[in-house]
Length: 132
Image (tube, rainbow, N blue to C red; front, side, top):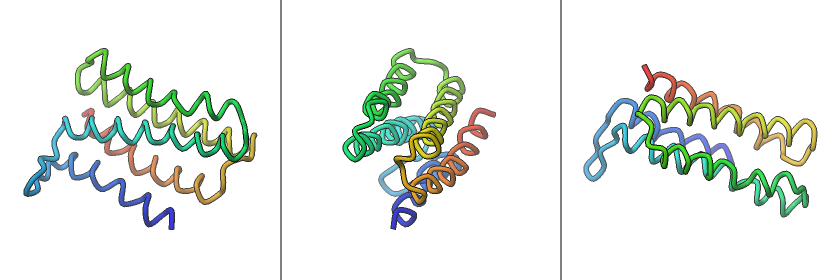
């Protein structure tokens, strides 16, 4: 079930990358930044649930870091390609934490970990290609 919910979340990244306009939405560079901000923040929020399950203090502290990171990137008003590059780094930092919580702490499930690998493999190319 998580794959059916998670993988379609990649669609807006590619609608924006290809500048596809729909009836009420213009999928452009700015929409790409907004969506990337939301998704990066959401990835941290997942760790609220990890904390509630495990009471792991690192998880609760980490849960707010991606949102703060994304907020700081937006607040510093970098150029578009710098913003996207920093978001790409953020996704890989979150993935590193996923590795930590999966292999060392053993508090996230295999399905979620595999989904995160798939999603990062789908998100990163859209970001990297948008820089160039």
